Amino acid sequence: MLPQKYDYLIVGAGLFGATFANLAKNDGKKVLVVEKRDHIAGNIYTENQEGINVHKYGAHIFHTDYKDVWDFVNRFADFNRYTNSPIALNHGKVYNMPFNMNTFAKIWPDVITPKDAENHINAERQEIKGTPKNLEEQAISLVGRTIYELLIKDYTEKQWHRSCKELPSSIITRLPVRLTYDNNYFNDRYQGIPIGGYTKMVENMLTGVEVRLSTDFFSNIEHYKSLANKIVYTGALDEYFNYKLGKLEWRSLKFEDKVFEEENHQGVAVVNYTSHEVPYTRSIEHKHFEDAKSDKTIITYEYPADYEEGMEKYYTINDKKNERLAKEYKLLAQKEKNVIFGGRLAEYKYYDMDDVIKSAFEAYKRESK
Image 1 (cartoon, rainbow, N blue to C red):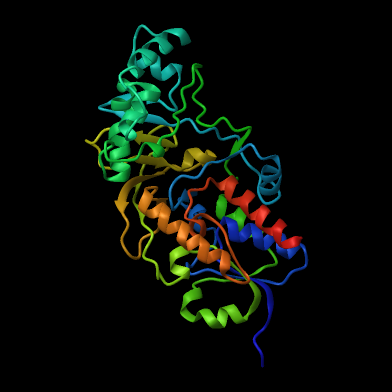
Image 2 (tube, rainbow, N blue to C red; image 1 turned 90 degrees about the vertical axis):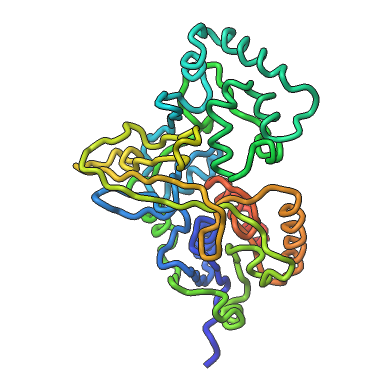
């Protein structure tokens, strides 16, 4: 018998793949999704532990200004009113994030009005003359040295494992400075967490779609290609081409979970640690995302890591070397017949969740023409 034919074989059951699969299925297309992990939802996968939906690949807060994207995700889950208001901890002192009037009043006791804060920041910005040559100079030119050294420098160096003086200024093209007493991290119109977790949301998106877990596309690539008229590929861009131009570089993360025999450990979902004395960059108390009711709580400590084979790929390395190599791979991708490359890994691009969905919308729209 000839292998069963599908309209689309989608490689990866993450947000891009699930969105594309849902759109195609709703148009009557026959879709097969293959996923090398043993679960759907990619890096937004949540797992229920102790009655708490734990974000297994780091904190994910959904936020968007796209009404079509917001309407789309609300078809698959009810969203709560969670507002992201993280805090920063530096040498035992707590600061509000993003940088706002609460932050400035804590740093400079004489700050009461927005004008007071502007005076401090503008005076410190003058230190940098001309075009900033690296991340440190870029940050100081935006928010001044005090905020840079207190809330940016050590955190960034832990994140990238390099001195801020060695990092390109392009990494920080802007920093939010709010001259209001508002601790909401995002400016987007819509924000929240899907009640019941992201895994349930993606499961609902994939209703009626055939999904094969623990299935590696590259274990038998010609076979899987023969199953469908088109491939939607959401894996690593360089891996698709067997790394023939070289390997793109990534930063990764390691996580340490701890269960505490108490209802509330840190009082907030996300704490950023902005000094070198603490080896991790963030701690996440998952129950605050959905106000979970449990007599225990789970904290995840997030450690930045150099990428090694077998680890998850989280952050692109945005330097000239990798940008050039990614461009060369993307030119190869454009020549690949009947293959759609989409998502964070396949485009070697950092994406917020809403932008992933929007990108899948646009990819499917091009297909439908």
